Length: 509
Ligand code: MN
Image 1 (cartoon, rainbow, N blue to C red):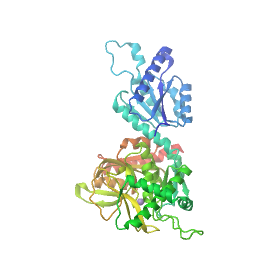
Image 2: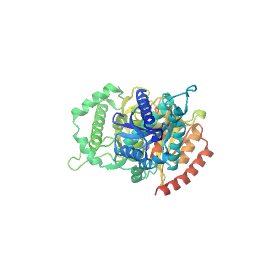
Image 3: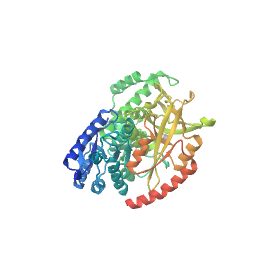
Image 4: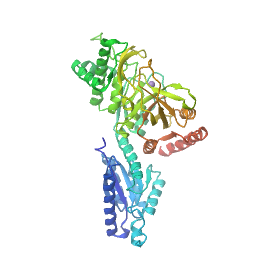
């Protein structure tokens, strides 16, 4: 998935110590980059771009990085002392994510042999401080990772940033199609699409449901039948009260909807989409019997999500974007769009049932999903419709949302603990059941105080560090509700952020 991306590595040095020293620095840097690439821990290829020894050289590399689409970010490291005034113009020009790696070529001090030449060569202890200072002076958003380059721990932290940087590049090339508008009157899922493109990079467009219906009509029976055969291989077929005839009719219609939506997304070059249960196509003048979709295209949304298309229900384009981003960061594992549905009060284990009308991604399933057809009485077309039903994995996860506060975007992240639900024989939709951390009361109170949505992008795979890196790169506010959260401090954080982002915005304008 990341094979078209690369990260550039730039080593800071200077010519004060002579060309020979720079040659050694160069050799060490090549060895380190090769070592990181060979570690198997960094999912994006690191490309060594040489040493930067002057302001002109730094600026040239940073400008080249800006212009190279493949380059998703820059790693800097100061082998020797690198006077940081020479980094000012380059850092000002740099528009790609930045990671500053504080490491050293050799691990331990060679106590017996170390002389002044060795000290002058292995100077990241103060070279990296000099570089850090200029980044701080410039208020340059960046991630600082400290640790020995051969060790697993710093490599894993670089890997997190690499995945986020790749997802950031992906988001800046993301078009989101909205089939239908926002669910009427809903505030939290809406926002400023212009500002979203300015801050978060993605582009949101309306796509007429009538045009989607033209695709839907053109899907042949043969194509739909072939896809239904695929369903039979992948899922447990479970025919209930709808009966066999209705079951296969609705499954086939669902397959047609899936093929139609996928074709539109491909033809339009879109990576994410939203639907609305009040806008499902319908009778046209030439064919009054044509009814459009049976219901919301639930099965299609579930399967397209698993394929990597971001999804948001009821026109929720912000969550659709986030779902795509979390899918890219986790490389297509263990993530889904989810909605807070119903509370379950049960003392210490009080939890929230996560589900949706139909649209939960099978990537979080704990079992082989069952393909079922049931009546769904919400929205413009009340009908039987197909969906995948399953319980989700248990274990730790992270969920995230982005809201628009008028003057800025705020990302809200919550650690969650997924537990086993009880059987829900009368609720045939996929679900997850989680305890928001640190516990139900504090977790939900903090989320509500922060203004969080009822929709979120959840993952079992990524850690909060991913969202920290993402928010840092995007330059948006992020609050993290976790085991250490208490309401008093959390409220204080929200108030302080209010001041910080007001001033920050004023400076940017
Ligand atoms: Mn919803």
